[in-house]
Length: 244
Image (cartoon, rainbow, N blue to C red):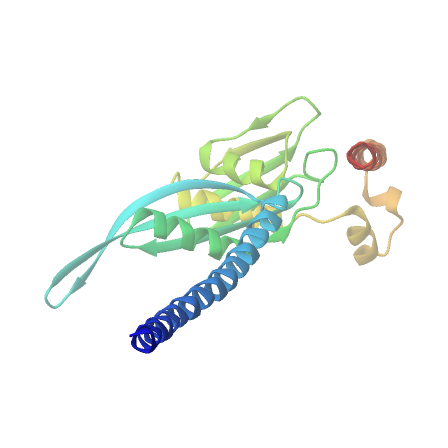
C-alpha cells in the first residue's frame, strides 16, 4: 500500500510541475512583452516631451466646405488655411483638405511647416514699407513705432502674430478673401530685406541706404535680445543649481 501511495504522490507532483511550467513560461513572455511595450511607449513619451519644448504657434484662418463632382455625384470635404510660426521671425502658411475638419487642420499645419521662412525684423516691426500681391489680393505693410501694436484684419493679424511682429501698420487694398489676403501678406514678407543686403546689392555704404533711426533701433533691438538671452541663461542656471 505504501508503494502505491508513493507512486500516486510522484505522479501528482509531476503533473503539477508540467502544468506550472507553461504558466511560468506564459508569465515570462508577458513580462518580456510588457517590458518591450513599455520601452516603446517610453520612447514615444520622451519624443513628445522633447517636441513640447519647441512648440510652434498656429492659427486657423478659415475652414471652407468644398465639393468635387464625380460621375456618380458630389464628394464633400473641408479645406483649412493654417498659419504656423515660432513667434520669433519664422512663419509659414499651409492649406489642407480632408473629409474631417481635424484632419484638414492637421494637413494644413504640416504643409505650413514645410513652407516656413524667416522674416527680417527690427524691434518687433518690419525693416521697410512693402506691398505684396497674390491673385486679386494686395496688402501694404508699414513699420510702426514700439507700442503701436498690430493694426491689421483677421487674416493678416494671424500671420503677424505667428511671425513675431508686434508693431505694424497694414492695409488690405484688394480682395477681401482670406486666402488671397494671407498669400499677399506672405508675398510682402518675402520681399523684406536686411539693410546689409540692400547696401551690398547697390554697392553703397550701410548709412547711405538705411536711415539713422532704423540703424539705432536695430542696434537697440540687438542689445535687448542679447540681454534677454543672458537673463534666460542665468535663470536656467539658477534653477538647475537649485535642483541639484
